[in-house]
Length: 105
Image 1 (spheres, rainbow, N blue to C red):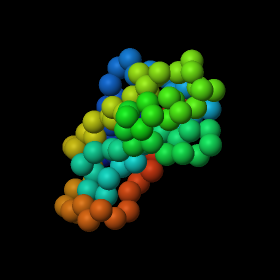
Image 2 (image 1 turned 90 degrees about the horizontal axis):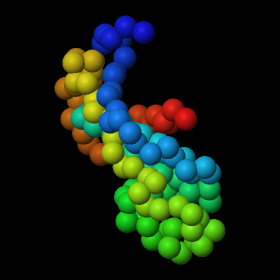
Image 3 (image 1 turned 180 degrees about the vertical axis):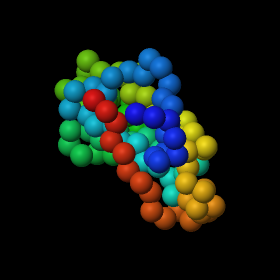
């Protein structure tokens, strides 16, 4: 695959923890292409937006006693702005639609 502006490229940080079994990590690209937002989903479908929410969930659910909040990373890849389409780069965020990406397992 060639690095060009035919798609939006992002660079992820190294050494991110692998998503724990049963949980799902989603990355959502903001409408203005400025950055991605990270969300985790528990096996029961509960959505987490921050590490504090994960920590509370793990504390409340003893079946996940082997997991720690440090097993979840809300770090997001950096959007390579030189690959964002010119027309899309001019769109200002209105809190509206987002583009959803699932992380690679």
